[in-house]
Image (cartoon, rainbow, N blue to C red; front, side, top):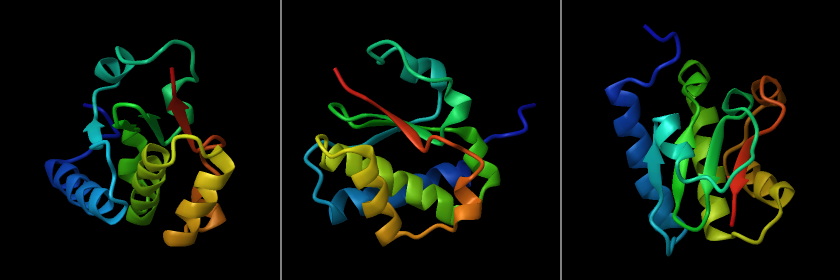
Length: 127
């Protein structure tokens, strides 16, 4: 059995939060959560980092978001920040990573000790 895994309750919670962010940000592209890394990788345009080095990945054009199962062991605020961060990438596809990170941290602050485990917050894929 995998050490890192989201429970059915986690998945329901993620979807509830994602729906709230979709409405709050008035997203034109509906975000879709994907938990299967192999399924997500079929939609990538090539290249990229090793998935264990990031909390999440996002394909802005179609709104697909993959969450790293390691988040299941982190404080819930980290997952909320990550989901919001990815939704911001969908809302503002031309904004630089640094700007998105700042916006997400202003809305849902996380302490530096939480984010030091992952050096790169996420990967955003574009065409």
